Image (tube, rainbow, N blue to C red; front, side):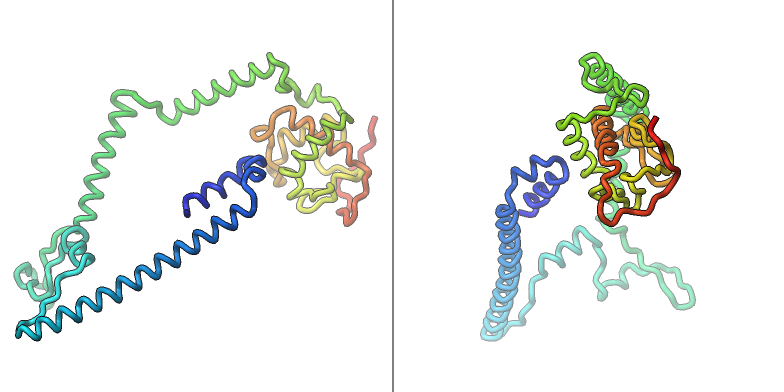
Length: 281
């Protein structure tokens, strides 16, 4: 149930269709089922402890009736600790492993290394051998530098394919054109809401970032080319990232048109003007 919840939550962060595909009622049901499972497991553990106590008391009574001394069998945890975790010698038998070293009355025990530590060490040795064999001896898998080169080559091929198909990848800061088409502005608004609104607020009134609805611009002008340039390359020194790795050229063009379209909209609680006055040619 936990894995189902985590998978569902992960799907929310990927696409909007995932949010639409999983109704809120199902999330509530899954959450309730998860809580029920936890409660049932807790009750089961408590019942097992009670049952173990009852069985132990009964065994003690039987031993007393038979005139025998009850010797409790080691539990699972004790067996696990002795055989796998530590292999520590019991306190009553420590004299058998005392070394001759004596430092101001402090003596040293000849205990073994914990088995779990040795098993992990052996595992790292095996992993190292396999890793070196795969990546350096037989060249079965590419190293990180080669993976980077492969991904860059794939990205260039995809970019060339988009340009050839006229998919918008050829749009740049030099040839971008302001559009008032409703579909383009709607898509630009969608891109803005998902990526720009956290800093510039929902209506462009400005928050962490400057106000986008007035005639003043902090870093460059307010032409469609200037806005596209700002979106594409950002201003890392001032806290605005480059959106080129995250958005397609078409998306950057659409959101640039949307930003230009809200200029002069005068939203409520607009941030004070910053930068220099821009006058359209």
